[in-house]
Image (cartoon, rainbow, N blue to C red):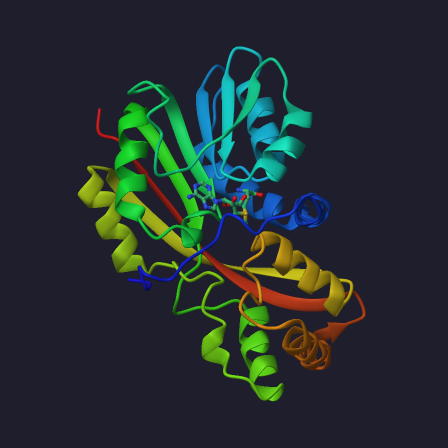
Length: 271
Ligand SMILES: C[S@@+](CC[C@H](N)C(=O)[O-])C[C@H]1O[C@@H](n2cnc3c(N)ncnc32)[C@H](O)[C@@H]1O
């Protein structure tokens, strides 16, 4: 399991990072649509999007469940929820809140709960799974995407090399994706919480980015202030310059093409 003592800060996000996330968030949105497909949301269903970010995927889910359904998105970051609320509608609501505490919701309130690229930011996954289990109705479905520690994103591998080329220790890059989980760890978490029918697939998602700056902006905004955290401004500048050179090896006529790897995992609460 990941280092439980590694700290992800929820206090370093800024309105600017939230706006950048919204600008480039279509990448995560496309990954999220692949998560919703197997969850097969139906008209009238009640859905919880945990770690909703700026709410783009929740808005899409609200279209799928239609006016008789309802989607709630929660996220601990005020600046992300402020943007998400611009999407609010009669069947779509957003609240600040954390995955570790879903007590505001009634037991069995939701037909579907999902987490799109959220769990690798959370250390206490057992609590999260127990909370989701309680909030799902019997027979309800759960789905998530998460980074796998054995398959780091290509940009992450390059970033480690960039840190080394800047004369710094790549081990200092601990925060991003620090709570990734292996297939075995995930299966155990689902089963310990009581879920059944666990299945998962590690998917390769190839993304095209216009420039190294755009890619770095995307990574920074997805990490809500934890990216290159702990490096000084001058160190950060050196790392970025080294990264911009390294990433050129991935240049194609369409832009910089890099692969990301995400595990898609699904299960359900027994009837
Ligand atoms: C990479 S973003 C994904 C956002 C969104 N799910 C999407 O598909 O665009 C990760 C999100 O996880 C949220 N997050 C981090 N820790 C969390 C926690 N303990 N509970 C719920 N969400 C959390 C962050 O605030 C951030 O918005």
